[in-house]
Image 1 (cartoon, rainbow, N blue to C red):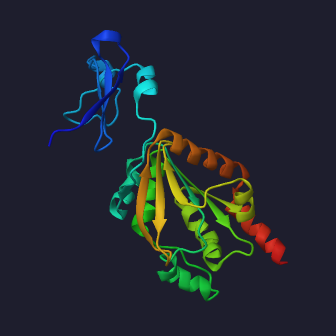
Image 2: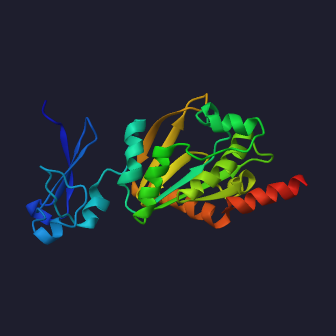
Image 3: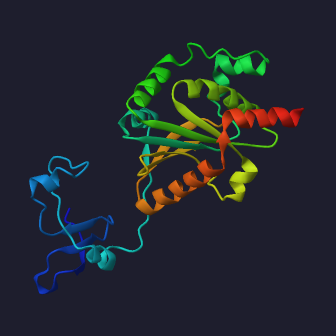
Length: 252
């Protein structure tokens, strides 16, 4: 089927190169211009697949003639693909946890121990996950989380406060933040990971608090907003040990 293309404009005067066209049916944008051919330049490009040709366009061409109103189509991935992100990133993985419960936690033996009031034995739990975290942190990568906590904390949040001992032991940095402070800071209500400050993985849960899929966000402006939330959360959150001590002092 032949595309219906609309010429949006050019930044090159009468010779028409480089230029931008827009597919009126799909919303896809077609850009043409001189190819980037220097091997040293091409070697610096990331995610250049076989068959793709890098081209060079002036920045003002995109500003002046790229479509201004774009409806973003969610990029949804399954949980297996999501798991692979934790070995594919290069330097930092950061998460904001905002939910009051996670259904998957409540299916574990450690959660049963916790709700019975017994000391939780984390030894040997999730050995494959722990080994992967140790391997990745051994490569110099960083894993960090901020967990929001209600007043009073829910059972699930208190369980995760105990769980922080295990996560810290395999190399994660765990901090806690009161929900009232998160709301004051205007932090998102979503659960999400940020990988390398360039990719956001937004976690989608059903009404029963089960993780069902993940939406990837790579648009720079949107990623920046999540990164700004990360920076605010990290500034105001405290290490989980200190937070736990504060809760104990309040109970006394």
